[in-house]
Length: 65
Image 1: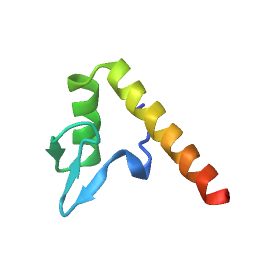
Image 2: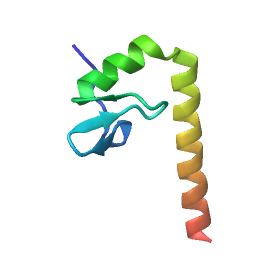
Image 3: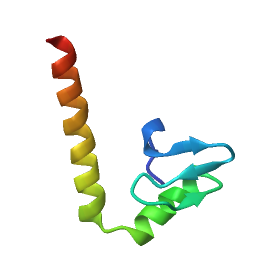
């Protein structure tokens, strides 16, 4: 069973999907998912996720002020 990807995991660019960590693009979200698994270290993916979550929280806190 393959984990599902959130809508923000890939950026839609016409008929392709883009890796959120580099310039790689694929025809399907699955192509980009496989690319992430094969080409990027878990620590790199984890750091990007933590940074994105932190940025979202910071934006939310600033919007509330």
